[in-house]
Image 1 (tube, rainbow, N blue to C red):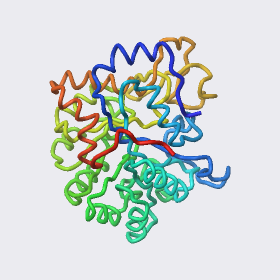
Image 2: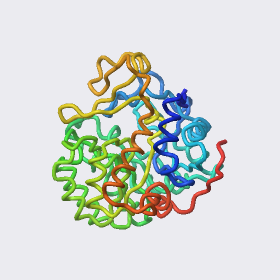
Image 3: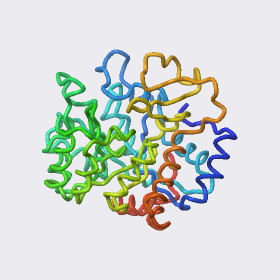
Length: 352
């Protein structure tokens, strides 16, 4: 089940550290929805190129589960998501997009289409329009399989032809950058600068702060981001206060958005950095056998562990304080900035 169980530790964390610091209305700009009927038969899909641990958190996440998760995690708040499908290789993109489009239409939610780089520009445009989507979610898993994972470039899974269409329509593009060097990778930085320059009307959101989960992931990234004018950034699945503070030092906070990455960041655990890489400390046995995953470490001392999503929010609030953001600027990250991107949202949406 994708819906997290809430513990006394979670309740204390929420009421003591988060509730009073969050606006009453929140837009979650980054949430996944998919159904068991969207899954491909075992063995019929290529290997994933993304973090293995993310696939352990939830087998499915119907919109009803997402709604229940918000009710449990954010009592006293109205949370409205922007939704898109699962980006794992075991999902039928077209079927999942159809379900997301139906959910969005019935519930009045903004949504993005998971896109595939082999779609022509015309196919891409028509599928986004037909689904009533606000834009697209490309992903590195769909880059040509003959490209080694470490060598995938942004334009291998987000073709310029798609960007041209998105720019013409002013669509959202939720961009998860590739490559082991993350935000500091010079290829990524060169292509981000090109996107910022050449597609100024596309609302490109560099998600996870460019996957800079550790200071060592930044490299020259902040220097490049400081020169951009149009790129947006979300703090999704990032718990590093110092990385967030450095982002706020170089980018107007009006270009920063909150996202949950639910159900993935409903993960129970605590993130640390060792040898320049992130490591998720999780309760022993909760996520199966993780002995082969270098990003996961189990602990028997799990009573004090809360949800990683709560840790993300706390990290941002600390960074906002350190950067001197006003309460209005901070609240905007959780609401107004997303409304500026997606348009007005309904706080009373319903799941089908």
